View 1 (cartoon, rainbow, N blue to C red):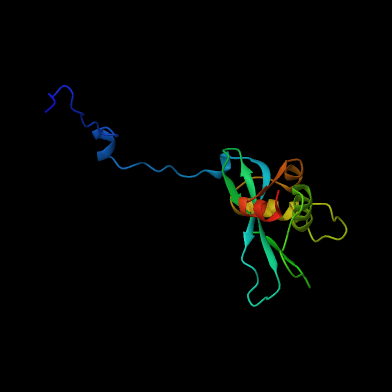
View 2 (cartoon, rainbow, N blue to C red):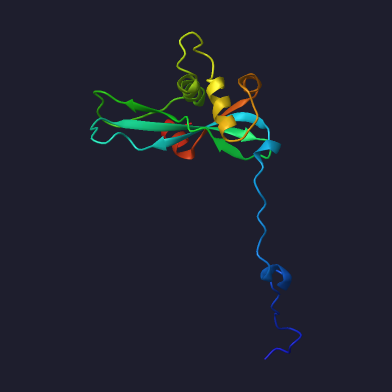
Length: 159
C-alpha cells in the first residue's frame, strides 16, 4: 500500500463559495449590440413526401451576425428542391461550390423584379428592429454577407 504522500487527492473543480451561490443572470441588452453582417446557413432538408423521383432539398436560414459574434435568426427562410427526371443508374448532384453559392444568393435575394440583384434590406431591417436592434436598411446594405454550406451538402455536391 502506498503511503499517504503518493496517493491522489481530491480537489473540487469549483471553490465552495461558487457552489453555494447560484449563477447570476444578467439581462440581455440588444441595444448595446450592432449588426456586423448577414449569414446564410444552408443545410440538407427533408424531401417533399410522396415524391418517387430522385430529389435533393436544401433549406436556407438567414441570420444577422452581431458585434458580440452571436446571431439573430431573421425568420425569412428559403428552400429549394432539385429533381432528376428520367434518370436511371447512379445519381450525382455534383456542382461547384461557386455555382451552389450563386444559386443560394439568387434565391435569397428579394422577389423584387425591379431590383433582382438586391437583398430585401428593408425587410431585414424591420425584422432586426422588432428584435430590439437599432439598424436601418441603408446600414445593412454596406455589410458583408457569408454563405455557409453544411458538411452534408458539401458531400452531396461533391466539393
